[in-house]
Length: 335
Image 1 (cartoon, rainbow, N blue to C red):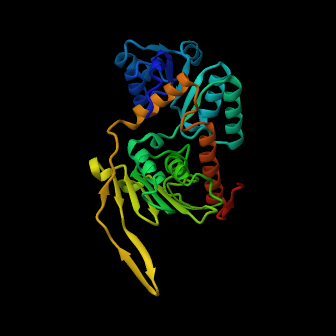
Image 2: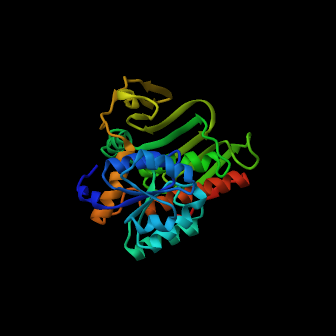
Image 3: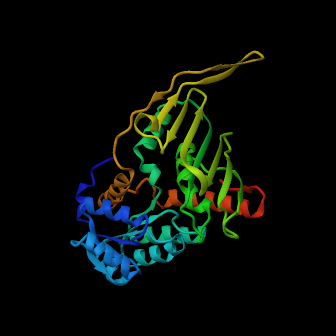
């Protein structure tokens, strides 16, 4: 990751939402010297983090937090994103919001326009775009090591964390959609999706989405929070080689290139298997890189990788998947 934004540590950052993921954002922003103030609607959460970070101001109201910071990091439930992002941008703050940007496409466009009008950075928390292993995979793909892209398969499976306010598609799939769109460089033209509701009426616990692109590339995304073990894997198939980004793996096993090839010799299929080759990647916490990217974008004025346009593209695919899931019919996207 570029490091030209080191002066961005002068930015005063407020974190809204001190829950499951907020605590990780707090830790990284503090380590980067940018954390200024924390806010949560629960007094018990504020008291807990006040003891952990005695050098950081604890705001009792959103207004106090907004007044004490240059930039806002939002790690609250997805249903609150639109209102909080709009409020922060309207007061001239830079904003980092965890995925998804919001739950409505029209609202997302309005937020993007507001950020442009205010001249402020708006960045979406698509963490895996900043994962050093994915970035190494993307570099290998861009360098032609996999050849022409054929299809992508992703799984994001675990036992929990189960939600009622959003389904497994909206909770898990943004990560995979963001990576797939980075590899394809375009939106799909057709989306189908199916799922199952087993724990709470109206909330899908597992979904399988299929994306078809106009260049013939296919992608499918399987997500579930009622799976017996964790499996977080991105499989990328090219006509020259195949790659697997296994986020549950460690060390060299996390990112492997398989130089397998399959072709036809007349009427005979020929498969040539080859030994897996590790792809080197930097050993750095993805969230640290993502937080630094936000600070760098503020310092340099250059859009982050997960900028509003990227966030809206992911949201368009999510919205199409949800409509296909609800209707049981394919959804076609405009170019």
